[in-house]
Image 1 (tube, helix red, strand yellow):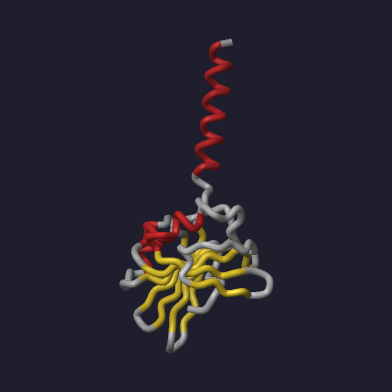
Image 2 (image 1 turned 90 degrees about the vertical axis):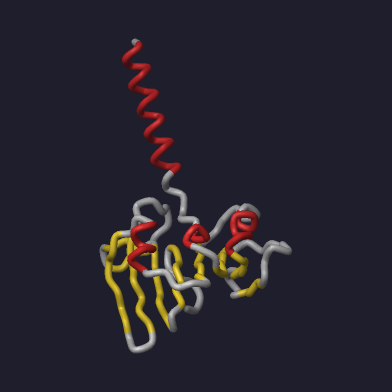
Length: 153
């Protein structure tokens, strides 16, 4: 009976640990910058630098140091993006966020990298591949979004 109790306790602990790690990434941990939160919810907050009505959702802009406080006001967040104040190598970002490279696209103006991290709960699909992190580099600026960058970059 004791072995069964220990086995059940270990299984429950593993499930709780696994789903606890499936929270979406806290992009503000990448560095300082401007964060955009995409949500279908309309909220009022002095923390928001700006709010844009897209008709089907809202985009809230906030400085990275206020992101957690603004994020706490939402019950549903459909996506986030951060444009970093200082350039950070996309490879470093991918390592820090435990992202597996999927593919990239580039032209003379920008490079966009798509990846997947098993830690995030939200994703989009391209063919049979899951994507939940997008990194765009343009004019020396880096924008990172999950599941993809839902605004301009």
